[in-house]
Amino acid sequence: MLDIASAVFGDLQTSIVAVFGSNLGWFIGHALLLGSALFVWRAWSNRDHIRAKSGWNASTLFDIASILVLTLVQFFIYTGSLGYPNTASLGLAVTGALMIRWFVDVVN
Image (tube, rainbow, N blue to C red; front, side, top):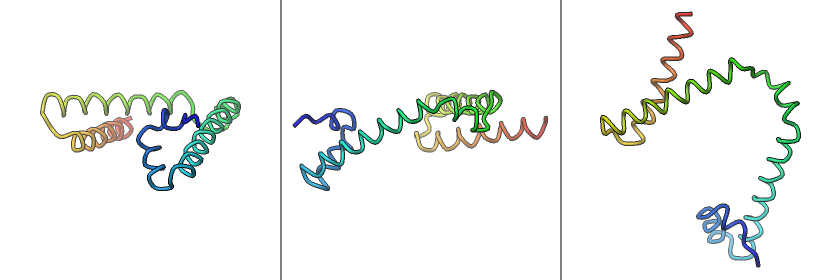
């Protein structure tokens, strides 16, 4: 049988096959793949409705992008320059970015 799910999911599909067996694991993996493809297709076909009714505007997207950029910059500083472990660096970076965002909101 053609095993597309292993190429897409990799180790996740291997774990599914290990838990459910060869035939059922193949079926579950491909059902997940089909469901994911249908979800992406549905979201893409309704993108105008989602964009119009979600309540998000350019300001919200700018806030999200700025938090992500601040988090990435801090993460690379903590891991590269200071040598912190990845998990601690990510926690500090997310906390720092959210605090900076909160400070900007309070000052404005």
